[in-house]
Image 1 (cartoon, rainbow, N blue to C red):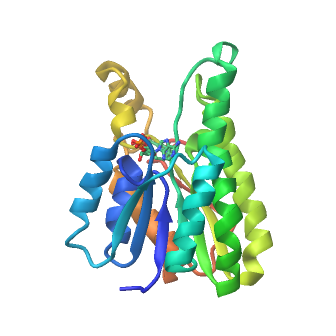
Image 2 (tube, rainbow, N blue to C red):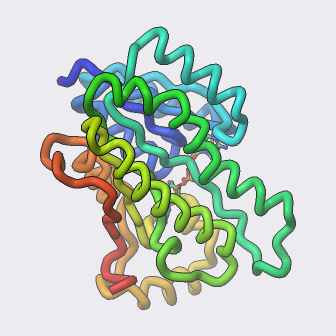
Length: 244
Ligand code: NDP
């Protein structure tokens, strides 16, 4: 059990939830959520029997002031985190010419700007403590276009550029920054797609199945662990061969 904490944004559902459950075997975990308090409380309950302390906080990552308040509070109470998993994300799909400016901004604020708000407070203490690991939950859509996902894809591609630059700026402080790029993962989002369309999508994947949230969580845990200590500025693609 490590006596430090890790922040997982959007840890109440899907990939984030699986990541919290996985990390709590070894770390104290703070996670955030936005709207669904029931899901967040379920995660806290599920983690009660695990070694790590797990606490969920409502915090809309697109709200700079809310992030600043919570980050300052967490730093005051628990000191610097060892790691951050920037996982919270939304899609709001629409063809580019039909996308409303409000939706475009909401995707950028949630998926990208939130990372800046959190980093602004958390990275310096991590640099001062002399080590740590940051994982950005990007997407294969950041490197391979997907119709209807221009805002989402742009935000996810920007995360890759951000991770590369941060790895250069933070490397000498021992803080590593990497991106995970999941392909189609079996979460709530996938179940909003009609069954026939899901079957068609599955056929396009060389491994002929969607990924599991636990497979993404395992990769995130690896990037935070002592097993990946020379890896920084990289993108790790988990897509069953979709982008091969
Ligand atoms: P889910 O929709 O299942 O869960 C999203 C999580 O993010 C929830 O905990 C949600 O909380 C939280 N969240 C949403 N908006 C905000 C916000 N403004 N502030 C704080 N938290 C917020 O997502 P997935 O598990 O499917 O995806 C997780 C990440 O993985 C995303 O970044 C996504 O882009 C990426 N990804 C997912 C893939 C997939 O196939 N599922 C593929 C590639 C990448 P609440 O419910 O309370 O709103």
